[in-house]
Image (tube, rainbow, N blue to C red; front, side, top):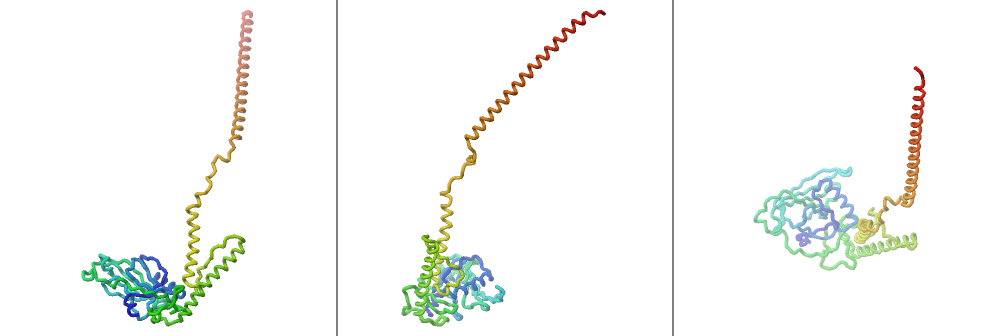
Length: 346
């Protein structure tokens, strides 16, 4: 146990918490509360913290009197501690914050710019769960005598230890991979402040959980096949309520959710990539018109226009002839009156 702690071995939450450039107190408390809920159903795995990147966030289980594990970074100043009071979800809580700055990786960094903050809820939470966040701080010069002094011995030792529950009713129970079991010479009997457990019972529970998940999947597939006739059974729809975590192993549940999410994203990307390639071309905007019908109407209109033009020409010709006749009549009347005028005596 002492050798493992000296090497920096610790219990880590197996799922990633994402990369956060900055992390506020409220966000840290929310992550701790959410992590406490998940820790009741998710076993923590043994591992190292070694040269973490900027923004990396980890959830660790560290018993009360155990020191923080080595993380592969050398810090040039002591760690500061302060307590902050917050009110999250209507409950007052106290958060203990440990902050250390001016860290660097020996032989890799040319300036000390790394900083680490670790949070734990001392009142209103689980004090043994610690959230660790690494970020970039103001750079400073590295002391020459510390430039190339390693923080830990490399290569790191390999510890093949099973995951273990750290919170809740299952606290202390180990989860062995399928087909594996307790082996002598390991850390199976090392007390971690969580109590012992029956290893055979844990193995039996793991196997029962796997069998239960397979039976549930087969039953749902048969029910869907019966409802849809000869249709292909659909995928198993899992809700995220977390109730099934009490009876189903984390590995089996994660695999089922991965398959479900993979099927959903496959449908989305398949439609985005191929949805428009086989689509029919849009119809022509002139497809609503009939060419033959339009030509017939055009010929009819031309004939009507020609008939109207002919009638107009006839009317103009008739009007012109009538005007000529009237002009001749007037001229003839003037000549006869001139003859009568000459015979009147004055």
